[in-house]
Image (cartoon, rainbow, N blue to C red; front, side, top):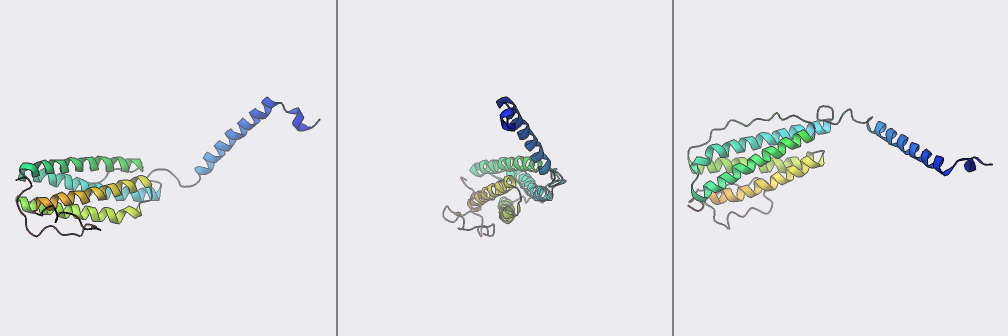
Length: 201
């Protein structure tokens, strides 16, 4: 009688089950022999992403602070716009904080201490400058991320700041046509030359 004929169907299935379990354990063991960890402290790629996300977080904290302190300068519909922009900065801060934790990093960013002008037009010009710098930074950083979630967030933030610039151009006096962004605006388009009337003012 051959060996195969001596093995019952139940024994054969149990053997396959044990083999599958052993294969799974082996796969886990081999997978753990690569990088020496899964977080930013032990994984250089995630560490790089965490550092880049912290730089982004510092930008958003700074913008949130600037909008908070400049909000009293705005009137009418532009005040409502300022409130929306500040609220969105808060959402960006939350998203970046979660992204940093998602790659196993720690939030270390702080807002830059900037002097916010007491003049409405000068404040809007400062906001425009910071939004432009943020757009340029996000476009530069996007291809450098190693993990997909931070890369997706980065591109979303670039698009958001591009939209903010359109609104700020109008706040600085540009008409609807002049506020349309350039085809490939990477944060280098200057603000309107002179501040005009407030939106809705």
